[in-house]
Image 1 (cartoon, rainbow, N blue to C red):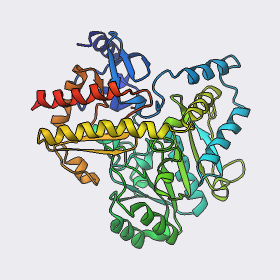
Image 2 (tube, rainbow, N blue to C red):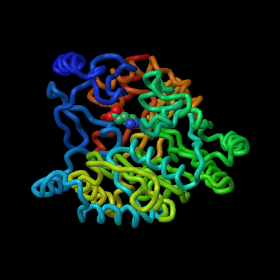
Image 3 (cartoon, protein in one colour):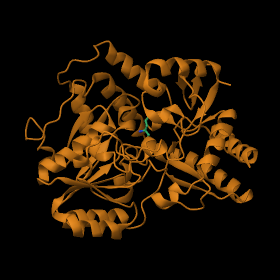
Length: 427
Ligand code: HOZ
């Protein structure tokens, strides 16, 4: 039992709402006190009691290299000697912007921000400023951070904790958010037929990750590209989770789709608070100081965050990186599918590259309705059984798990064994 974590959680609850600084971390959906993490290295996190776990949370996505990668730490330490924040431009920001523009074809110009939430919020404001329209279209169960207009039928922690439509969002704001179903292109077409001239942008996670991993159906992203173009709306890819993760060029590279705007976070910051919004020049140039769309940030382009991000991009730009991730993640998927078949359990694994979700109680998940049919009670028991066997997963049935370059074959095989034992233990 994680006694120190329990004590720390009790202390945290006295001074932090719910004891956490981001709701899903509270383990409310699975029960128990969250592990307080003391340190992390490679594929493992170590809790406040000194217990090691093989980690599939990966700080919710950024740690593609594994934890405490030597060259990332070194770059941050070198940069730290020069100071922490200046609130003025630095040369490294140009390097980061150039790097993103050269990797991602659809991006000519990019603005650096601090979090995925800021990136998506800015993307929507750019789209509204560029088109002069008010409404946006999003998908039920997709999560794009916690800006007001996006907390409507949101996934991730909002869904996990039963608040997909957050209180505190005005009805005026939410009435500008239209909803469609992920992988239902006909529903999207109907929405554009009804509201086309009012829609500034459609925002989508090209691979849904915040309802658990749900890949786009064949032709779905192409259909979104066509419909947005026909109706003069911008297509925003929220690649906060998928960017630099499912391939160097993200989901847009994987599926060959060119969005108007892209949002990046997580991997691009290598574990530091860095995110970005980018697109073609004429769209991005509506941003102040060139144009009338305002956006700002005291810590935007922070030197330490940019240094960690650049060091991470250096590593994942090396040949063979995504093949290695694919090999490890495929090994894991094969193992899990074998267990599901051998044990005749109703479950399935969805995976794209190193992002995956094991859905329990449902044999196929191609959309949000199917994801919601999963057995949440079974998931809670599974989560704790895995923890007892040294595997740290997201405390939610509606999240992606992440394999990193630091996960060895031994880690993967130990995970497969733990899944087998856990499913047996909770049967
Ligand atoms: N946005 C994350 C889930 N997809 C949650 C981040 C956190 O709670 O740390």
